[in-house]
Image (cartoon, rainbow, N blue to C red; front, side):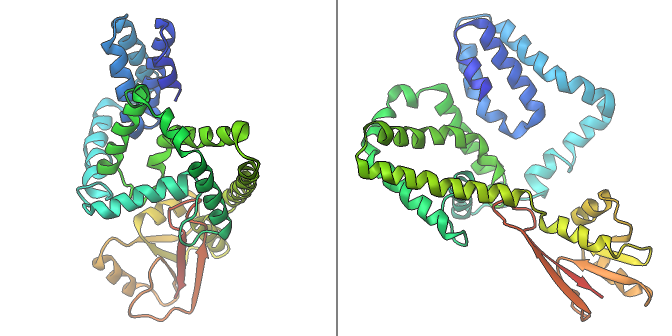
Length: 333
């Protein structure tokens, strides 16, 4: 947002600051870069010190790229960027892009849910009834001011750099990001979409009927409750963190943990002492049969088909706080 703001400024110094911020942003979150592409290119198209703008952007990139090359090494960095850990992995192996999830209806539903439920905290199946109250109140506010909102979306708005950037970014995430399972990709769109909601609320606050002002108060009351509830839940442990806490009381050299590699990586990085057995395919499952009878085996995720667990425990967290593993079950053998 800062990049878009400064790039639109007439003063070349402030516009150069926008390019510098854009360069730094590439090292923070590369997948958000298409959002900035249109505002920057439109600014370069205008008359001005283009070389200065390009130099400012290059300086922003240098802030993070030079230390990264120095620490990692050019050969290792290039290899990591090209192989399955990054570029190839993102578009082909990890899943979620249009090449691995080609169902357009599913992608559209996931994108809408991310904006509606995750981005704005409005009602979706399984959410608290308070979110339904928030949704009804907000829809009433928009309906009462729909004509005023539409009038604000004139030709100048539709042809503005931020709006075109949002449309371009929307196409980028729809085809090339994991909008089916991850909600974080819509984050850059939320502030711009919120402007329309804010304008509708402002219309009621300044010119609205008394009834709609009461609706506006109710909306902010319910919305505040939802926000505070999410803040509290963000401070609670996720399901995988609860599992780490649970297994920390059992850690020993005899404890064997079988799970997918990513869960193994998380628990090992938390210094949980155990023998880790990553499960990638059916062949890895057969290695569990060779375990000593004295070994304590814990399987995270799915049960073993040929054994009956002596204990089962399931851990939860709100998926609208964190979509990653909102429900995980531990099977003890």
